[in-house]
Image (cartoon, rainbow, N blue to C red; front, side, top):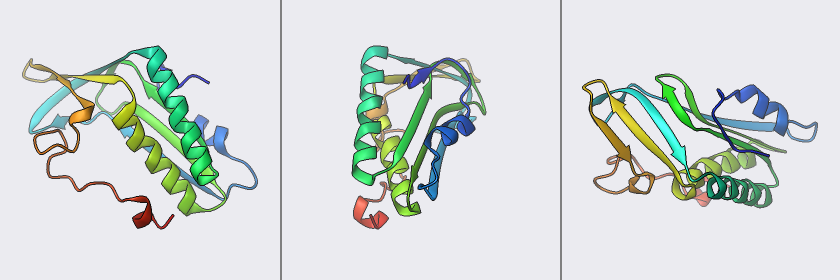
Length: 158
């Protein structure tokens, strides 16, 4: 199963892939291109990846989430040029109960951001361009400065 695509993402397709009669909870995450970053107006993004490694790492993350929460997980990430409002990453996780579905979904997106070699090039309305280092997320000077850290598994109640 390929996790990387240049085609528009369809969350409904992922929900269909994870749905089953014994899975009563489905949690989804859809990350979309926003129009600002760090006080600057964003015009568009361009995602690139070391595809063989990114595919393999996405598959490891999906496998880990499946095993930890007995959940079915589907994950796709866009590559290429994306305009404001377009979906960049989509995740659906289904489990017998909502707590496990939410935890598996949250785990998947957090691990994608930390581990998968996908790079984001931001193009700004003012003509500037900047590569965003995903590993800078959470640093005092990184793109999420001032944003609270994600809850731990214990805080998720799982």
